[in-house]
Each structure stands twice: as structure tokens, then as C-alpha cells.
Length: 262
Image (cartoon, rainbow, N blue to C red; front, side):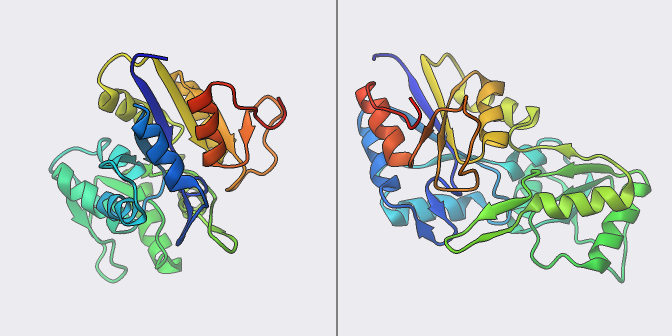
């Protein structure tokens, strides 16, 4: 097939599980780029800065310069330069807010400050005190943004609580429903459209979570290829599923690969 072909590729549960690359994933990415596919990584991972992910991909052997969109990027676009933003999240969110020109407020328990926006993401140091600070800021009228609503994320050993679990706690305590920035919501769809910048002849989304990656594919008009290496190991029967990213690459390169359940 000729024309512009773009693969939107999730990271956690597709390319790697926390510290361990999934066998065959890097070779699959390199095979697709060698065949002319553009690979745009789309991740809800919010704790680490985007540079961390790009450097990691390079260290694992991704041959082309990685192009990536993250949920912190989408969340930062919902904030305005000069706004005071409480960052109840990791350094990846803080970095994007600073790039946006926001005034980042730590949300210190002993020195609460007035804020315009509260942004919540994966935050390993989050505790009861920080929950109270975020809750009071939202109750006082601050806009409430979540990087993503994923309740868990996969590691090489087990599932761990995701940013969505923390977000749910703040939402429950404040009584306010947050705006979600990442997959599969509109802010991420708009970010993807802006990055693509023009017509695409074939657009495919590959991910491990049908509830986010599958709906993200629907939102941007992409085909969805589900892999069984992450969170969902029993997707809906209507979902085209593959063992791993290597199997997706074989399908796309041959146009005759056989999906599980076909």
C-alpha cells in the first residue's frame, strides 16, 4: 500500500512492562519504520517526562527518532500560561506545565496556596494529607483535570495502581467530576490531530486496553489492533486481537496476517 501510513502505538503493556521490554516489540517498531510507517507513540503514562521515554526507546534500539504524545502534554494544553496550577502528579506533569508557562504550585500540606487549576496524575508520594489539599482546592473552585483515568498499569510482575485510582479519590472527596486529558478523551484526540497535521491514508492504533486504546482509535478514526501483553487479556469478541506487537507488525507488513479469533 502506498501513501502515508501511521501507527499510533501505546507503550505500557505494548512495548514494555515497566522495566522490561516485551520480546519482539523493538524489532517490530523498526521493521514498520523501515517499511515507511510513521510510528507515533501515544501514552497515558504521566509520571516521567517525555524525554525519559524517548531516551529509553533509543537505549532499547529504536532506530528512528521517537515521536511521542503523552497525557501530561494534553493536560497542560487545558491550562493557560500564567495560571497557578497545583501539580498533584509526578515530574512529567510538572515539566509540561512549566513548558506551558504555568505557575506550578506544590500543594504543600503546611502552606496551602490559592490555585486556578488542580492537575492529578500518577503520584507515588500521594497520601491522605495531599488528598485533603487537592480536595479543598477543587471545592474552592479550582478547575479539576486528570491526566488519565486508567485505574492500573502493567509491570513485569503485576498490576499496580494507576493515576486514575488517585484521581478517583480526589473526585470522591471533592464531589467534582474531573476533565480527563489523556486517552481516549477529546484533548488527546485533538493533540493527535494537531501532530498528524494532515491527511493519513491508513491510521492504526495498537494498545493493550480496549477501554482506552480502543476508544481512542474510534475517536481519531483509526483501526484498532489489541495486544494481549498488557492489561486486557480477554477483550470484547468484536476486537481484533494479537499475541503481541510483533504479530501486529507481521499483519501490517504482509496485509495477510491472521489475527487471533479471525
